[in-house]
Amino acid sequence: MGRFALTSLFETVRVNSFRKGLLGGSRVWLAVFIARFVLRWLAKVTKRTEMPVKYSERLALGESLVIRHVEPD
Image 1: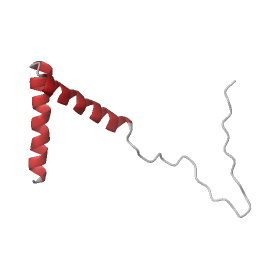
Image 2 (image 1 turned 90 degrees about the horizontal axis):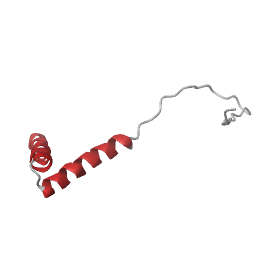
Image 3 (image 1 turned 60 degrees about the vertical axis):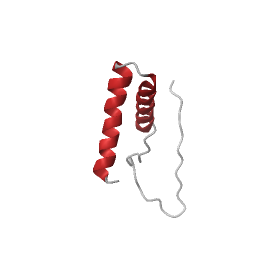
Image 4 (image 1 turned 90 degrees about the vertical axis):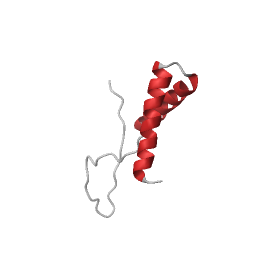
């Protein structure tokens, strides 16, 4: 199965789940629509990307770095 065929399949499922499930009232297609929506939301919420470096400096031999969190007043 090529990339185009897979994309076409996902697009067909997306359109059918919306049209037949949300608009048409089919419970099976509605479940597919909800599952698809939840999975996309979870993928967006749990996206693991590296945070940008805010500060970078080399430490000399014997130096240390202390990171603290101070409670706001």
